[in-house]
Amino acid sequence: MTDWRPDAAERMTRLGDVAIACIILAITLPLMVLMGLAIRLESSGPVLDRETTIGSGGRQFQMLKFRTTAQGPQQRAAPWARYPTRVGQFLEQTRIEHLPQLINVLRGEMRLTDSYLFD
Image (spheres, helix red, strand yellow):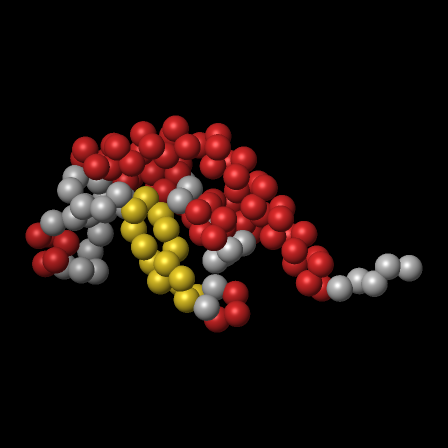
């Protein structure tokens, strides 16, 4: 009879997460490059937003996603208000904005099931 160890199950889950994330990244990489260019052409500012999040074990990490809001003086005037761009609206409607979270999965900062891709 084999010895069931929880860490073995965790390693298998991690291996599955990495394999699936690699496959999805390979398939969507051209789309992600196009979206990055579209964001850059539409407005100034970074392509990716980073949000501090608490992961497993209480560790903090920077969760990545495509930027969907405008950068500029209007945002500084009202920080609680959102000014989505046209590309940003498309990214939100199609959930493509969450594809960079696959990088967080590869880094081991979050699990694939924790990603907003599959909500």
